[in-house]
Length: 122
Image: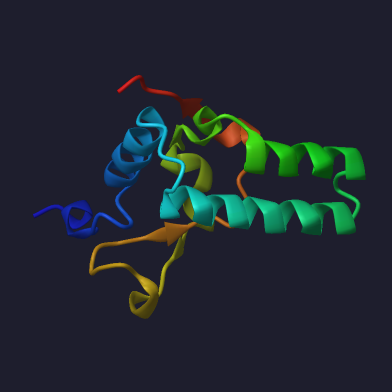
């Protein structure tokens, strides 16, 4: 059995993509998954404004899009990351923090030139 077959749905990119894609396609406005993402992005945008990474107008726009934007902004993308570009920076997730027994990794910093974004129409 492949190690990736041991990754449960809550951490499996294919399962996550399908679930999010289904919720967006159905225009699900009460999705706990989307609500969680919305809260994370809202907190990040406040932090970015506080540290000067964005200005107050950009914060206002982000908050508007998060709260009042079309559900389609939550459509999932696949990020194709060539392993050779990031292999030295892959950090294994400790077993106690994984969703299952399969391998999981974190890449702390990912430069925009190190990946391609793909949008599927499923």
